[in-house]
Image (cartoon, rainbow over all chains, first blue to last red; front, side):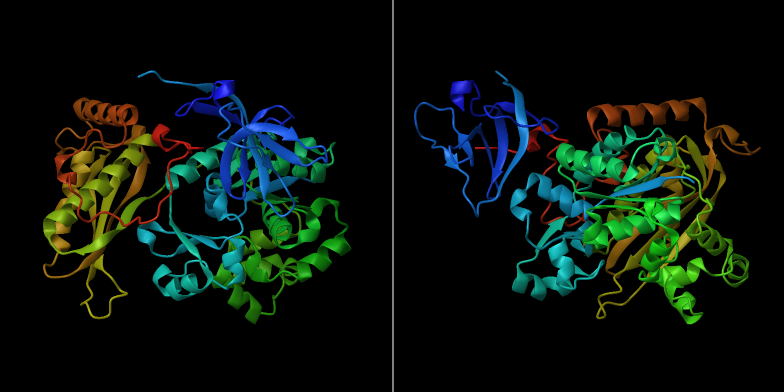
Length: 83
Length: 424
């Protein structure tokens, strides 16, 4: 998620009480694994999770039938320590 | 008519673990007691396998292997923190709250009767699930006893969708429901009294509701009379908004390995007493007597069994860790016998009185002197600020070879920065 300013080791602030909208950065659970992505929707109306990393090492995750998927919370901020 | 709600978290410990480890969803999971002894929380999948509450883990090993049951050590720091979150959310739904246990709370909703309380209950349920990730059920009734039963129905009967409101049922409908619930499910009846009631012909909740309260008072106790009256909608047990001070403080643990030598036992007793004394000071009380006990394991038939305990009355009540430890160790010396494999030790403080009401005795050596009070409060403050056991009595020991077994404990996800969940 480096393109939105989230670097490895950063602490992400996650607010569970917020309703996630398309375009929000979310902490999601896909098939039992945590991931931080941008919430998006496919043309067919399925949820889709987009990485924000122009190096292309991460690909979008399409949520298909049979996958377990949950938005755990909305990432509302982050902070970083320098030492 | 009053409207009292009981809200409790389903399979609380297991549900807490699942919030931060979603891979546990849908899998059979048990949380084990201290020392990984027995099952203290079970997921629905484990309940379906017929595993009883309190089943010893070593007896479950075969079943666990066969069905892939995951056994987790208990992580009380996590459960306490999640409990506080749930309770503070609930506080917004009523000014009158009684936190009944780590995962249960009563709310008096009488003042909100202009609303549809079943919908109010659904709102509570949705919010707690959304904000904390924990599933809860809500039971509403006109007394605490009835709200407990309503909660039981909300949990066991899917038709209620997690919220069961007795107050919206007509009396015929409610009685039909109560006729289907066994008498042992009633709050305060439990496994011990249920067989006695059944023998007298009170098999269902409805049977007991229709009983004569005065006769039951003679046959059982005033508590049973209250239960019958509460089942009929008369409030006999009020909400306790402030938890009453503990009349006894117990601190005990099983050891990770059996221990034989006096010094290790003395270390453990010192630690337990330090913890008990800290609790005592937190509720601003003094203890008038100390009980200390040790025992070997009753589950090892090959080992000789020994169990002994001793109550030591204090010359005058105190809250000073050093005095309490001295007394406990003096007692330990008297009950200790060499050459046994000790499995458990503990202390209990009783005859607890409020700090203000202590009468000094004529011969005591400056009990509760200002110096001692200052030392103890300084010690508690340092430990609160700098972390547990930052300073302690040296006799608590530093190596703790006897410490508990906690083979599979999850992290302090919400209470330690190092343990915050990582996402790659």
